[in-house]
Image 1 (cartoon, rainbow, N blue to C red):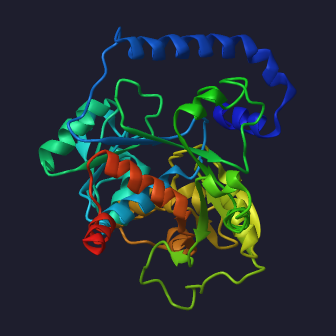
Image 2: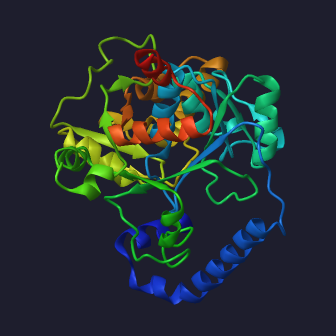
Image 3: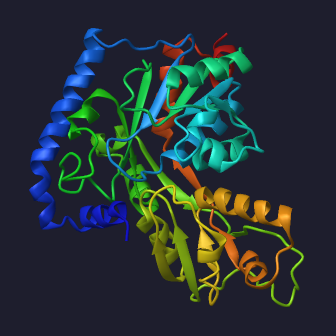
Length: 375
């Protein structure tokens, strides 16, 4: 078991031994505060992009539903006629090849898994680089007509100035022991939430209850989202004998849930809520799977997230470019399923976003329609 996995599990169960690391958390917090103040005061220089920038991130380590949120926002902005682009650090990619534009043919090993997922889903203009200034410069050089840029993560990347900050908080996971790294899983103190818009990622049932809580002003103004599972899909279509090709796993049947995302338990819980007998296999975030280890889960269908699917599909493409799938690997290809999820945002989120865009001088089709109605 890796150190990352050990510490992540300790955070989840709030292990007592983590408090031995408290002096390190104090040091981490002090360095973080000094660094941020240095950017605020101008001691360290920061970059102002020529177009408005929206940063979407979190104050915790691990998944919060940020990537599905970005995909939904990009879809919405595209529908509203806003020429939007996305930048990312490109975690898990090859930094020696960055800055780089992301296309539908890009490999996760080069640009990262999340950028591949975002572009394959939305077709948005996107660039990756740990240096966000270089990412934006590369993106605008290729797409000079962009009106708005969403920065995937980078909340703590204060070298990049931003016009809008949305912080995603997993309401179900909470903040653990509320301590900074490494005692807890917070990158910044909870007080940081007061300086940005907070999007509470809730369970679908909780979000529905808030929508009906008209008499509670706190809930009325709350910005929320939840994830809805879509229909399960085959990860790979091959010419394997149809007799071995299984239909979608039946509810109540066992499935191997293999996940290399920041918070695998959410994925396992989703499959469980759909009625499957889940055998969970959590891996570290952005884990580099191999076909050999996946083939070990051959007794039941294997279900993965869309983020992991882009890497696994790339492995299969690389393998089939050299030789045909046979034996265990052919069986694996027909045993792999993907469970897509969609971020569903509350009406408050869209209203608030439209207001923020209007303040930045960005007009949406909704604004234009309302303007014509008032004429």
